[in-house]
Image 1 (cartoon, helix red, strand yellow):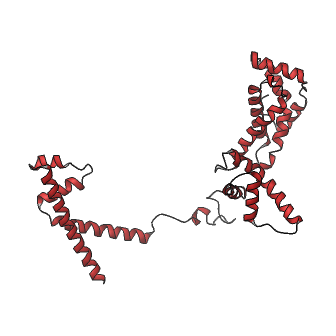
Image 2 (spheres, one colour; image 1 turned 180 degrees about the vertical axis):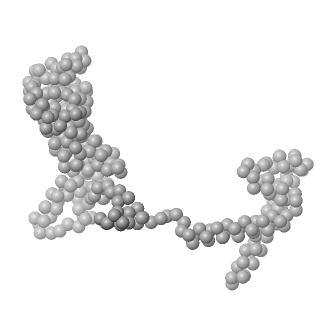
Amino acid sequence: MAVSGFSDQTLSRTAMRAELLDAETELRLAYAWRDQRDEEALHRLITAYMRLAISMASKFKRYGAPMNDLIQEASVGLMKAADKFDPDRGVRFSTYAVWWIKASIQDYVMRNWSMVRTGSTSSQKSLFFNMRRVQARLEREAAAEGRSIETHELHALIAVEVGVPLHDVQMMDGRLSGSDFSLNATQSVDDEGREWIDALEDNAPQAAEKVENSHDTDTLRQWLVTALSALNDREQFIVRERKLRDAPRTLESLGSELGLSKERVRQLEAAAFGKMRKSLEAQSNEVQSFFA
């Protein structure tokens, strides 16, 4: 039974008029579909149990999904059940189909509850659909005993009751406490009100930090220029080729160009770095003594 383009009232009326299958007929249709891929038998089986699918879909209306979409997902679960049903096991098709229908509807509800993924594990799914019911019962029991129950205690009791980790309960409570809101929505009904996104903290560097970083970079660059100027031409060449190129050259290639051994180039490089280090330390000490 295709459900696209039909209202939930129309689907319900159509399903209610469908035939009721006795155990013998149901078994014959199941064998015909499994063994012969008889599509007419599949259609009769699906149509006969659409009332079950619609009934189960109606139990999930409180999650805010359109009823027609819930019925669509329920019918998908029903068709999966028909495709996987094994009539040799001696179980009624309706008993087997209930699990597939419920699983299909629950997956749809969780996918569409929020833009943020609510949960993916079986324990998180169980928590999503049972947390509020268990919470309400625990609060009623506490009220009947004349005591209040703290949030942390309530979370711990729910975790034990549902059989999930405590942090999953805390996470799910936050996800279920409110729906998604656009960051571009205004904070007040006034059209000129500030958008919520404007209230988010900006983690990017602020103006003062940018100026300070720029000043430090310029200072360091000047120190390096001064340190390089203290080197002779050959030492400057080695430092530029070894440290200031996007693709630094090897000691061997520099040695071949300069007519020196690899070890000699390494010695000249080390000496150049030593001179630069002394120059940088002297400039740093000069700045520190100025502000002392």
